Image (cartoon, rainbow, N blue to C red; front, side, top):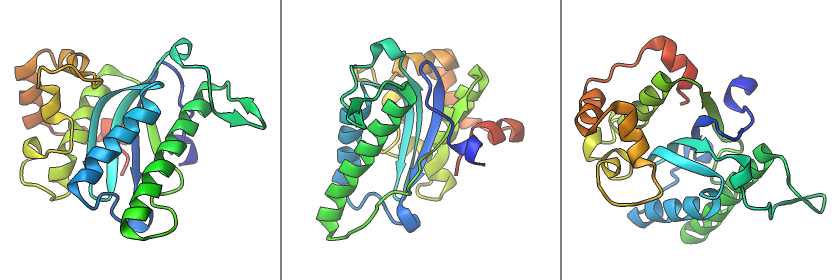
Length: 207
């Protein structure tokens, strides 16, 4: 289980990343919290990974990302024993740790709470096949409906499903995702007809 959920975050690899609130507490207490989370995520992680899909739910979130090539990393500002980190997996993990700490500090202040907001270790699975990428993106986007948070995942505002269809430049890897599906119509159709294969589910799904 440890090896499955906590593999090293290697350059040029895709990962499904998941974390939830400590003791299943809510991570998001207001609409602004969702936007604040994405801003902090961009600030701490965009130098080290590209984001292809995401979904933020009240007490957990899912991401589909690809770690950038190591040569694109900025010189590490993260120190270990007084020296900059050099291992790419350690650098990305430290960026996530700082992101979680920064967001947690803000939510703790907002709600007058103390202690850890997130579970200690965030889970991730390497996504190793093109077919798995399509399945993982669809699974992430359908998550709000799966959990009964909304009746139709396509209307859920805190996921990348609708944003991918908007022709507006962002750091979200929209065009690449559409290309996985073929075109906009196929993207919509394959999301609507989605039934996950149990063999693929075992390889990519975290919950």
